[in-house]
Image 1 (cartoon, rainbow, N blue to C red):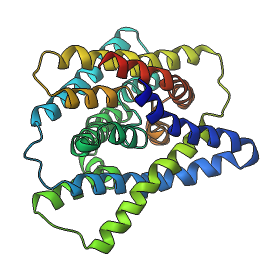
Image 2 (cartoon, helix red, strand yellow):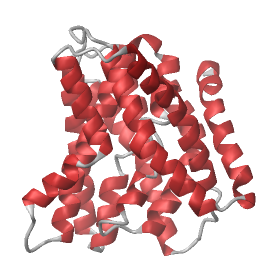
Image 3 (cartoon, rainbow, N blue to C red):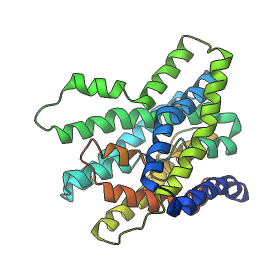
Image 4 (cartoon, helix red, strand yellow):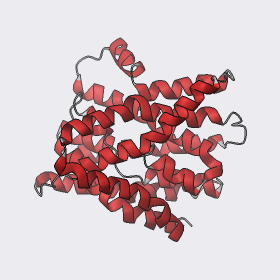
Amino acid sequence: MIEMISAILPFFIIMGLGAGIAPFIEREKWIEVLNKYGLFIGFPAIILASLTKVRDYSTLDLRIIYANISILLISIALILFISKIARLSKEIRNTYMICSFWGNVAYLGFPLLSGLYPDSKNVISVIIAVYIIVVFTVGVIILEISQNEKSIDILLLLKNLLKNPLLLSVLAAIALVKFDIMLPKVLQTSIDMFAASASPVVLLSLGIFISRKIQFNKNFIHSAFISSYKLILLPLIFILILQFFNFSKIDSSISIMESAMPLAITPFALAEIYPLDKEIISMAVIISTMLSLFTLIAISVLIQ
C-alpha cells in the first residue's frame, strides 16, 4: 500500500500544480494547446516508444489481450442495454457508452504501472493499445451510427479512423515490430524524449481542467454514476471474470488497474464531433480524477 501511495502521489502533485495555476492563466487556451500536444505528439510517442522497444513478444500471453477486448465489449453492451431500458437520450446514452470504459490508461496508467511493474512494460503497452483500438473502432462506429442513423458513409468513416494519430501510432508500432524494422537511434531518442514529456504535460492540463466548478444539477447524478462505474464497477467486473482464467498475477493486476483509471479528457474532444453531453463528461472527468487517488489505492490493495 505504501508503495502504491508513493507511486501515485507525484501524478497528483502535477495535477495539483495545474489546478493551482488555473486562476492566473487563460485556462481554455492552455487546455487546448497542452491536450493537442498530448494527442498529436505525446500519446503517439508513448505508444511507439513502448511497443517498439520490446522486440520479443513470444512470452506475452495473448489470452490477456482477448480477455481485455472481450470484457470491454461486454461492458459496452451492458451499458448500452441498461441505457436503452432507461430510455436515456441519444447524447446521454453515447456519453455513458464511451465514458464507461475509456480511462486515462496512457498519461496516468502507463507511467504509474511502469513504476510498479518495470519488467512488464510490453504487457502495459499492449493493453493500452487494446483500449485505443476498441475506442476508435467499436466506440467511434457506435457514435457514427447514432449520429447518422439513416445512412453511414463507410469510406468517410474509414478515412476519419485512419487520420486518428493514436490509432495510426498503434498500427505503425505493430508494423515496425512485425517486420523487425529498427528506427535510427537519433529518431528513437527523439521519440523517447517526446514520450517522457507526455504525461507531465497532459497531467498539468488535466489539473487545469479539474479546477472547474462542479454544477450540482441533474447531470451531476449521471457524472457520479459514470465515475462510480469507471472507478469501481468496471474493475470489479475485470476481477470477477479474470479469476476464472489462469493468467499470471502481474498480467491480471495490470489489466485490472488499467480498467480502474479515471476518465480521460478524450471523450470531451469527441463531443465536438459526435452527440455527447459535454457537461456530464467534464464533471465525470473531475469527479473520477479526484476520487481515483483513493480508489486506485483501494483496488491495488484488493488485488494484492
